[in-house]
Each structure stands twice: as structure tokens, then as C-alpha cells.
Length: 194
Image 1 (cartoon, helix red, strand yellow):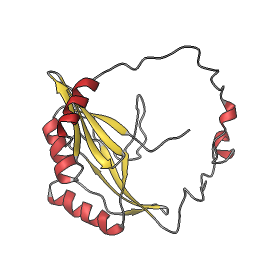
Image 2 (image 1 turned 90 degrees about the vertical axis):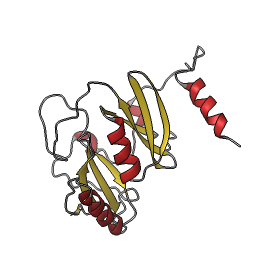
Image 3 (image 1 turned 60 degrees about the vertical axis):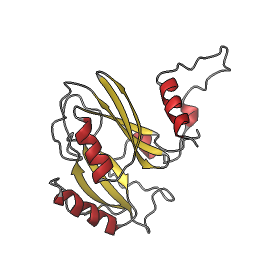
Image 4 (image 1 turned 90 degrees about the horizontal axis):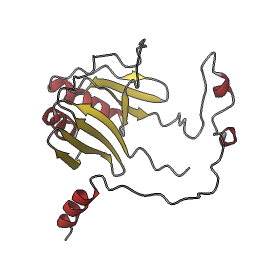
């Protein structure tokens, strides 16, 4: 596969203004796309030049119940928290001060061995983490497994085993790309070009 990163994570909010103020103004993530019409909005905030976090604004949606990062739950669940990479411990302490100064709870810095993390919540109660990779423990270069009882699949190692899955046969028919918001987005983008 030729993955390039996470294009975007799609979250939900009932209050896009609070969301814009937090992600754009407090955390400094540029608002790079804003789509919408009555009853629907979809805004994208730039994490890096190739990665975004996006929010749908749905009238009547309620924020998720506050849940501590990594705390097990029972019943339906889809995800635990989001973690954003930062470039140093100084950035973690700056973020902690920034969040607390503006009324958001922020944890102490936690050393996980391969990352040092700061935990908080956005205005939608989405649990967020900011992580700095510890330079002398590059798990991307040298993966580790310290689970005392790893699953059978995990015991097979870190490298992908694509032979476990069926490969698709040759494509026998053409496919269409449906337009979605393409016309409006491209028209707005072309107006901005010199």
C-alpha cells in the first residue's frame, strides 16, 4: 500500500464556532476547507501540510460523555482518543500552559518510554493527547512488544502479512467518481489562484 498519512479524521460537533475557536485559534490549526448548507457543515483544520482533522456540525448532536483516555468501557464504542505529534517537551509544556490559561483541563506530562504525552479534551469532550517521540526509542525503526500475553496475531511480528487476505482479481468494469461538493470546492479554489 502507498499510504501518505491520515488525510483527515472526521469528528462531530454541535457548535462549529466553539470548535473553530479551539482548533484554529487556540491550537493554531488553519481552517483550510469549510463546506456547508442549511443543516450541514464540514470544516477541515490543518494538522500538517498533508493531515487534517475535520468536523461535521449536526444540529441536535450532543457532546460525548467525558471519558478518561485509555479507561476501558463496556458497550458500544468506536475510539478512545486522538494523539497529535509535537516537536519537543517544551512544546508540551507550552500547550499545557495554553490550555490551562484558557480554562481547559490538562494533565501532567506522562513518560510512556517511547513518547512523552500531555492529555486534555476539546470543547466537544473529545479526548486529545499531544505526544513527543523520545529520540532514543524509535519504535518505527525498531518495533517492540512488551505485552506479557500478546495475542496470537501480535506474536507473528510487526511486519504485514498480506498473504492472509485474498488479492483482488483484474478489474473487469470501470468505476465512476461521484461529484459530492467538487464543483463548489473547485470553483472557490480557482477564484483564489492568481
